[in-house]
Amino acid sequence: MKKKKVAQKVCAARSGVHIAPIVACQFVIKPVASFDEVANHARGLLDQAVGADLVLFPELFTVELFTTFPDWQDVPISELTRIHKHGNTNYTEEYRALFESEAKERGQHIVAGSHLEEKDGKYMNVAYLYGPDGLIHTHDKTHIFPAEAQWSTSEGDTIELIELPFAKVGFNVCYEAEIPECAATLTEQGAEIILCPSFTFTEQGFWRVRHSAQARCIENQVYFVHCATGANVPADGPLPSGWTSSSILGPCDIPWDNPNGVIAEASEPNREMVVRGKVDLDKLHEAREKSVAPTYRDRRRRADLYKKWPSHMSDDA
Image (cartoon, rainbow, N blue to C red; front, top):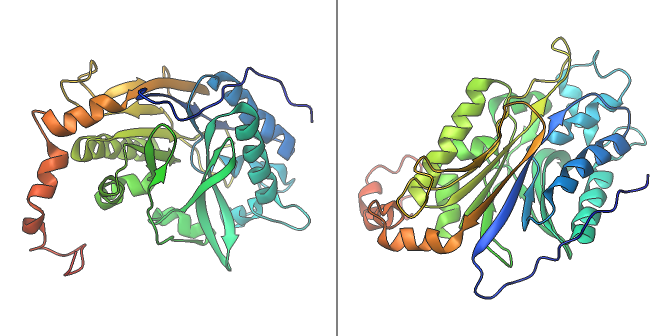
């Protein structure tokens, strides 16, 4: 399949520049016939993301691959594991190769959403980050949403910081954003931007993640990129619907012009588009030092207090 050529942008460390352009690709799943259709679907959004340092795709947007199987509407959702490997079809290898190639050719850092794959005999929800030089990081989702048990998903055990040329980032995949410790763990490691690929089946679920992401921004004084999957699939089929209105979020504080903390968001829910915004890392660090509500500092200041109720922490935390 011939790829459409687009203007390329080489991303590199830039001394003295602390503003990062970001694009969240609001991907809407639709029935397709082949991997090439999914690849061209993704490329169409990437073509709209020229000029961004960081481009995000949403959680499990590769569910679209499930529709390539002729019997997909007649099998249970437990068969979703087919999108990893089924018979002679190995979609995981094709998915990895696609995003590694696109990141190199476009000179961008691309979060390839997440994908369901088998690792050491277990199925994991794995988020990928590629850069111009290849694969940078993978993250196994550490807190699965209860519905993910329907397709036998296991949980990962690490939450790690990733240092990019322009920012320090880390993953909170969907439900992880609802667990405050996941964002706090990254912030303690130095995170400035938290990457949140998401796939929620209802509008209520969407807003739960969105409000959680905004709370994490305030608690930790970080940026959050909430990139959610939409779905345009038959209601009577096995695939869940998806509700989406992607956004780029920050703290609600005086250094920013947007008092509600919303830097950019989709102009319309559940419609495919890209959401483009810029995050100012200088403002972030200024707020951590001089904010009227220095939550980043004050959460540390009373760490001794929280140890009295160690329901989610070890005794020596």
